[in-house]
Length: 118
Ligand code: HEC
Image 1 (tube, rainbow, N blue to C red):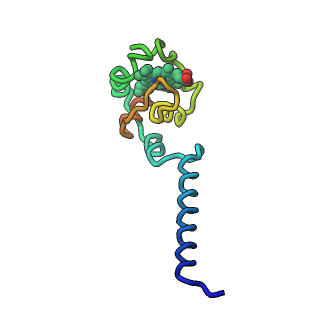
Image 2 (image 1 turned 180 degrees about the vertical axis):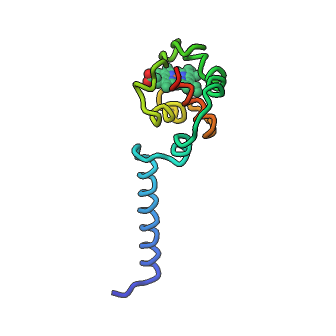
Image 3 (image 1 turned 90 degrees about the horizontal axis):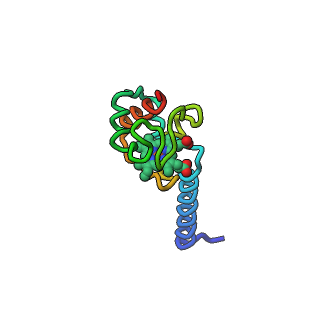
């Protein structure tokens, strides 16, 4: 069979589309840990700074002592959720009405340390 430029172009487009779909599937799949998450989990957070971040962003819903209000009591959260699950709870916004928070790695690590300390 004679392969024309047109055939090649169509094949090329098809391959591009397929690899795009592959990338999308990888992105959506939950098992994958993002670079952000890996970085947060590798940092040693500061509890005191985490408490300040909590008071500024979370206490309106979870209470100043994290005893619960609109959102649940967060004491002993580390017994209920993994570190990764806590990071995702805060950064992905998958449980409305809790919003998605844009914290940098260091802030998220500090917040995580605070949450694990209460
Ligand atoms: C607008 C209110 C609101 C704010 C602000 C908020 N949350 Fe929440 N949060 C909720 C609600 C409601 C839930 C319960 C969601 C669900 O699981 O259905 C929740 C759930 C959680 C959970 C899971 C609790 C469990 O027992 O599984 C964690 C952890 C959490 N929030 C942490 C935070 C942190 C940290 C912040 C600040 C960065 C924050 N939240 C800010 C409302 C809020």
